[in-house]
Image 1 (cartoon, protein in one colour):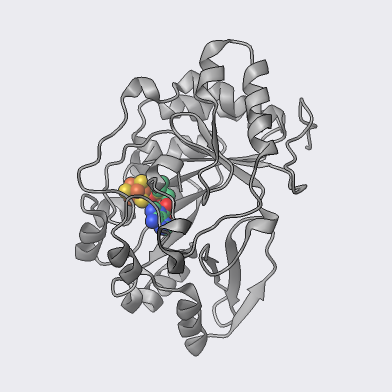
Image 2 (cartoon, protein in one colour):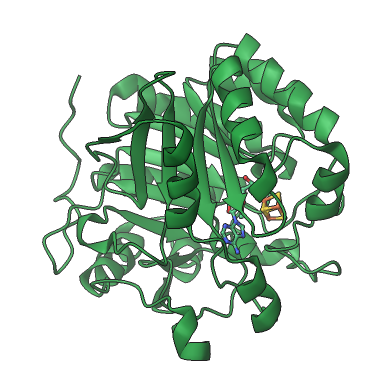
Length: 338
Ligand code: SAM
Ligand code: SF4
């Protein structure tokens, strides 16, 4: 069922319709992945975060403006207390047909507990981040994470009927040697797999991050040495490109923000856990939605602020390791939401 949005849809200055919203619901996490957080993170005071009611109002406003896909992320979204009530509330938009997809990006640590509820709330597919199948390496890269817990969570999700896509950050000298093991494991378990290039986010030690950078062109070339790769047409409007491995039928995605410019088809915006809308992951341009949310119970000012931000959505991002700090963004992924 297709439902016309309540208001005129969100169209940016480059004629891109904004139909995909990603919302970070917390900056907290039970892991400390080395490429995402420092070991001793200072988290925000609770009053700075959007409350569950504010999240509901804001997401509902976006849905009224034509957003059809909502992805909840973080930090770790499943450590936000009460997040299940928020998900339950969003099912009304799925039921009405205004929202086509409600989904989640998670580290998987809490999935064993949440998976049946998530399926009951109408989720069909979720993304789980996992960079290695080796328990020691997993503990090393996540600092606080434990692989068996995540594997149990993934099994629970599958058992609950959720389709799981694994997201793996490609890290030079860390999981290069596991490329084929990861592909095989996902194939055997029936999960799609997407590789992500390390992005220059947060207060990075530039040399360290440059050392971690494993270009996906390289990774793809290695896959092509062993398998026949068939390019698949892109229909996500996002940064992922997909191939099919002819021999196994498996689908592999590549998110290459640094080597492939995907901005022309961008259909998404992000909102941080404090209610700041970022219309481009790689730019600092943002607008505050928390103030209009808190100033009034009416959504007029909120909708105006959303439209104002979309009217300024930049044409594209600026990531480039070769230009030093110019192309970097000094905020953590856990703040913007990956
Ligand atoms: N905690 C959840 C998780 O890990 O899936 C959701 C939030 S996390 C910030 C979202 C995604 O961003 C994860 O797949 C993570 O691997 C990715 N990520 C974090 N920092 C990154 C970086 N510097 N470069 C590339 N991907 C990054
Ligand atoms: Fe937490 Fe996800 Fe960041 Fe890892 S990538 S520290 S799991 S928010």
